[in-house]
Amino acid sequence: MKLRRSRLLAVLPALVLAIGVTTAAPAAAGTPTVGSGWNNFSCKPSARHPRPVVLVHGTFGNAVDNWLGLAPYLVARGYCVFSLDYGQLPGVPFFHGLGAVDTSARQLAGYVDRVLAATGAAKTDIVGHSQGGMMPREYLKFHGGADKVNALIGLAPSNHGTDLDGLTRLLDQFPGARQYLSTLTPGLTDQIAGSDMLGRLNAGGDTVPGVRYTVIATRYDEVVTPYRTQFLDGPGVHNVLLQDLCPADLAEHVAIGLADGVAFHETANALDPAHATPTTCASG
Image 1 (cartoon, one colour):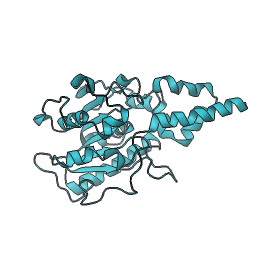
Image 2 (cartoon, rainbow, N blue to C red):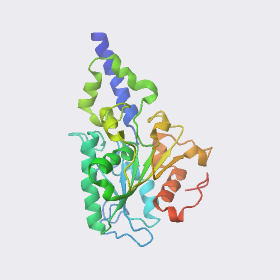
Image 3 (cartoon, rainbow, N blue to C red):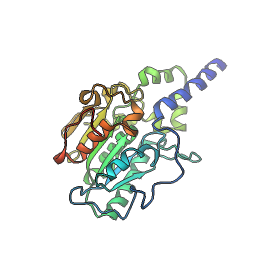
Image 4 (tube, rainbow, N blue to C red):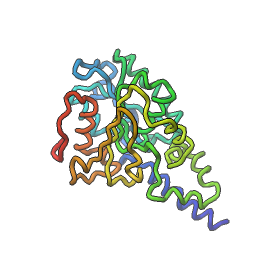
């Protein structure tokens, strides 16, 4: 029993880190404020870009760090851009997205309502990284989001969960490990392939009517694996593999959301398909 307990303690941190790491070091506390370019609640959408964009970070991410690349990129192109913190755990600063996915989806619902009220827009577009590309689907399907969202763009989203190249199967070797991890950080176990949450979310189809979906994935993803489980099936879905656009792109799970110009350009195309331009290795 002591041997099993020690092995469990060794495995759990690896699982937590492997499922969750989406950003580098944390930035200063707080959220970007008015005047910083994004999260400017006095911003009014233009005729060219009539919908605000809500950015949804990944597990262990936050409203600042996850978007230091993409938020300014979109602001420079004339979008009203907003980002939220969600899935906070008591006593855990900076690193969020750890709470239960359904609770996080309810937080997103409230934030979208706030953005729509401030901007006067009828709908928003959502861009999410990792869990942030999957969790909004819970909002769309179960919490009224389908009437308030025009498009969902997922960067390396955990749409059908992850097996971490088989690492998650180690949980079954230790009685109580899955329950322990679920109690400690439910946002992690919700994303393990085969979880009850994912079963409910994907039952009856991946999409809801009236929303456009884009998934942008990389074959070098080491967190959401196999990478093709990120793709969605259904009407209004556009699945993109970075290496089909640029074979030399080596972006992995973190880089696709943080700093990859090819992914950024494809995101801009998904937000404004009427003015899309070809995405190549020189994009961004």
